[in-house]
Amino acid sequence: MTWTAVFPIIRISSKCLPPQIIQIAGEPSGTLRGKKATGNYWAKALSLVPDLRFELISLLIGVNSLTLTCKGTQGRMAAEVFRFGPDPKVTRAYAHDAV
Image 1: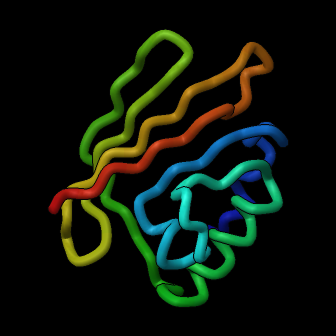
Image 2 (image 1 turned 90 degrees about the vertical axis):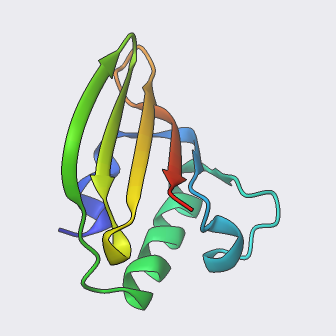
Image 3 (image 1 turned 135 degrees about the horizontal axis):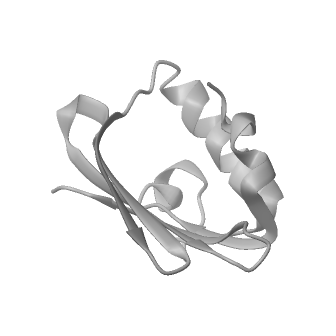
């Protein structure tokens, strides 16, 4: 799967905050804003790690949000939090990696 497979569910004005933004996108604020910036980030990230895979551990459902816990790169635990707007498209995405 490529990043474009999930692109339709991302709102144009969304914010994306994975911890790797500073290194991969060179964005010192650590925040991506909008589809274009998010797409550029994922294109670069997947070019650096083309076989990137996640093993889903659990799916947690909240009000207008969901959290995925998974094993990511090098078997490290990670959590991805997605906040949805009324349309329902992702308005914010947060990623948390084990240290």
